[in-house]
Length: 201
Image 1: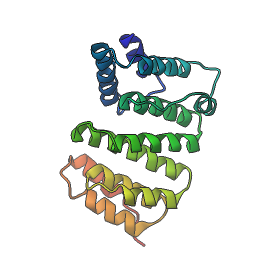
Image 2: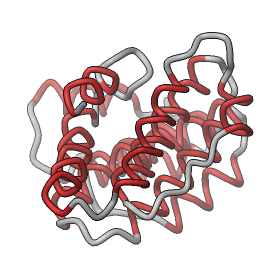
Image 3: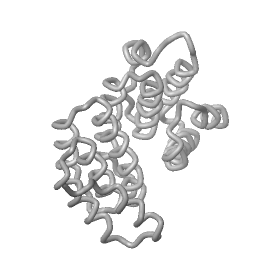
Image 4: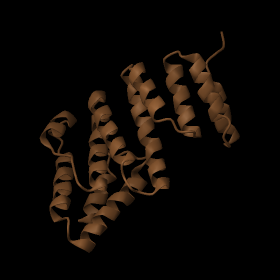
């Protein structure tokens, strides 16, 4: 059963960048089930939900209406909502994808996993969320999200620079690209960030 779930999570509906970390979370949740034998209903629900995801005759919107994606187990809920969000993205249903990613991000923030793992995942969810706001042309939503979830990291400032450049907020874009350049990085990455800076008028 564990192999079946892991095989499914590796398929095209899953986010490749954060797949390894989330697979670890799911593996831990599954192994806890086998060890404790105290979560049978939750585990069965997770398997059933993921079997529904493999069906091709329902789109993400239908699946979101038909399925209960709320779990007591953190890993099961995070993975289920992430998979469906990625499927919604594949179908260009950006509103649904954004809603699911925001839910998953909130679950992640409230989890008690290690800070190192949490920060790796937060970087990925923040990037997904902000780029969807860009796709939706929602400057206010994306700007508010960035302000509420600011992280002093290279990836955050690089992403924020991309966001503000996209909306022609060049002063903000310059600020974040310059903040990103304060971090240690390969020279090639430094050159890319410099090239992304808006042209000065």
